[in-house]
Image (cartoon, rainbow, N blue to C red; front, side):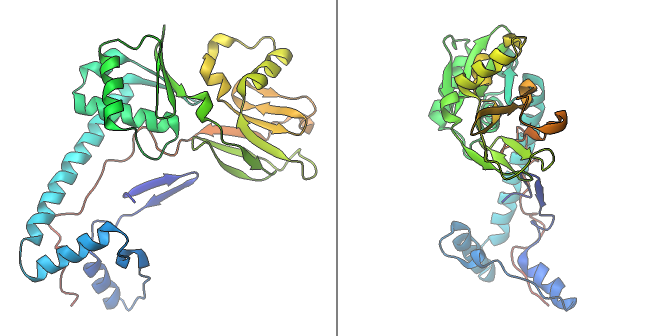
Length: 304
C-alpha cells in the first residue's frame, strides 16, 4: 500500500511509512505505549517478508544493506519525479468529464518523452476502465504508437476502454460490454459501481423496502430516456458513453440517470432526486508521487 491510498470516501495516510520498524518500536517502548503488529509482515507468502529478512541479515553482517537502501531511495526519487511529470502532462493532454470519460490531445501526448507518455496513457486507461492493474506493455506500446502516428482510425479497445477518434480529439471511454456490474442498493446505502462511480441512494422520499439495482443504462435505457425526454441532446453525450452511464432501476424499469438529469415521474415523492453518481475511479488519473524509504534512516537499528 502506498503512502496515500484513496478508496471510496476514505483516504488512508501512512506518514510513518519511511520510518524503520525498529525506530518506531523503540519510541513506543520509551513511551510505554502498546502497539499492534501486522501479522502479514511475517507471512512468508509475501515477497516483502523475505526481502526484509534478507536486508536485516545483511545489516547484521555489515554486507551493504545501507548501500541497498540508498539505491532504493534513489530509485524512489526517480519514480516520484516521474509521477510529478506525468501528472503535469495529464493536465495538459486530457479533458475529464464527470460522466466518466475524457478527451485526449494526441498531438500533445506525442510531444512528451515516450516513457512519460506511456505512463500517462496507463493512468488514463486505469481511471476510465476502473481496473486495478494496467494493460500489458506490448499492447500499450501498440496503442501509444498508433496515437503518436495518428493511425487510430476505426478505434481501438484496451483495458476495458474504447479509444475512438472524433472532431474533439481522441475519445477514451468505458467499453460498454465491460461495464457489466450489477449492484443492489437499498435506501440509505452507498457503494462503488463498476470501480468508477460512487453511487448513493438517499433515505428520503423512498418508501418501504423497494428493490433497486444500479447497472449501465444500455441501449434500452437510452431509448426509454429518449421516449420521455425527446429534448435530450445526443451530441452532448458520445455514443458509447451514454450506454455506460450508471442508472438506477427497479422492478418496473428505469428509475433515474443523474448524468442525464432524468427521473421517472412516479419514482420519488416531492420532486427530489435522492440517487447520485459521482465519478471517483478506483485509480485516480494522478496519484500522489511515490515515496520510498529515506536512505538516511538505517534499515535496522538498536532499539535502545
